[in-house]
Length: 262
Image (cartoon, rainbow, N blue to C red):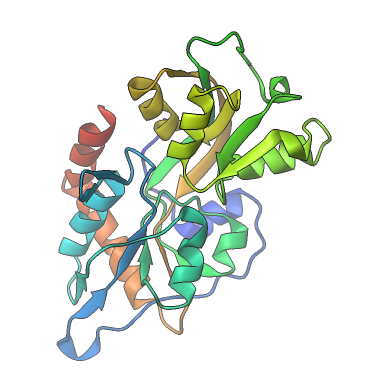
């Protein structure tokens, strides 16, 4: 899969057909002072963000740190953690200033918050129990089966828009979870038969749990860092410059090798 972030946010939104009006965002660090930025994330999405004992770790955590080290006039405060579905509200209510949570750039989200340039490309995967007899090969095979996804994610949107809305899956057959760890536990215990999940996260669960990837559902989605939509785009511009710097100096490649193995 591609791990490039070569196209800017507006170009990406144009490719997926959005007509949203994109507002500029940011916060100023004028006068040479340092702006403290409070980052927020949603643990339980390994390898992007998860708890290792008491420590918050992952690709998004390290990439954010590396990007802010290249940004003059900004510094990171302590991380705040939320369920994924609460992150945008936390941002717009000023509880945090920055989202780093493998968040897919969509037109609907971009109407509410501002995104950085894309920093990661991914598809969705469908995972099942390794020792089970259910072996779906396409989305329609999930019809009539109990399935799950994390609330507010692309996986949930696919189940609702492609299966439930089209009459291929009863609403009662879908379970929404606060995080994917809970969903995988239910899958292992036989309470659901499949999960729709971001491809790199599905791969990580398959390497660590008795589950396997049944097939890949191509979405071509891209992740971006989230910031408030404001009157200027100082923070957004600084983050984009930082992203480009860590790409150019090899840091991005090193982090992908560390967290994804290639």
